[in-house]
Image (cartoon, rainbow, N blue to C red):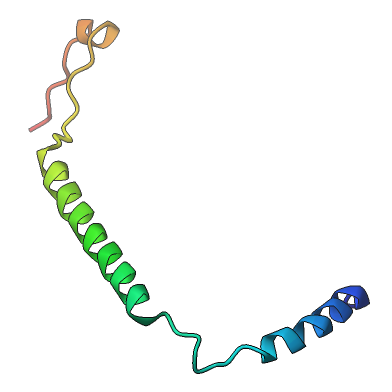
Amino acid sequence: MPDMSASLALTHLVPLAKEVDENKVTPGVLGFIVFAVMAVAVWGLMKSMSKHMQKVDFKESAPSGADSKAPAAEPKS
């Protein structure tokens, strides 16, 4: 069963929401500019990350130590 105090609190907030004019609440030009700048920044970061990931060598090198003393297993033909 829902908490009645939470329901009562929400009913007091409903009249506050009615006072806002729906036609005036828009992101506007500033919101578009901020979104466009963020989109360009993400695009630039992805392009840079792609360039750096191409430089990474994913091949593992032979570990030094105990494994280097063991003879290397030859593949079966």
